[in-house]
Amino acid sequence: MDQAAEHAVGSDPAFRFNPRAGLNPLHEAAIRLADGINKPRAKTRDLMNLLLCHGARAWRYSQPEASIHLHLHPHSRRVPVKLRLR
Image (cartoon, rainbow, N blue to C red; front, side, top):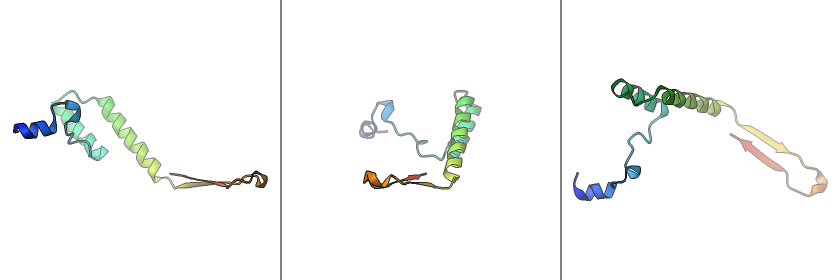
């Protein structure tokens, strides 16, 4: 890597490009499993938390959308409140 490209990326580790940043959670889990064969730094607890969070998120998004319409007392002169929960 030439000096201009290195300067553009930066020497601070916090600003380096992370190739795993945009991966699907299941794909990331597969990569972590593969890394675990060669590198013991991938922890089992971390992997299980990743898979459990992915399953919980998938379940939440599979639920139907809920709507709540609140009727307020007519003497309060306020507009009814509508809430949509996803």
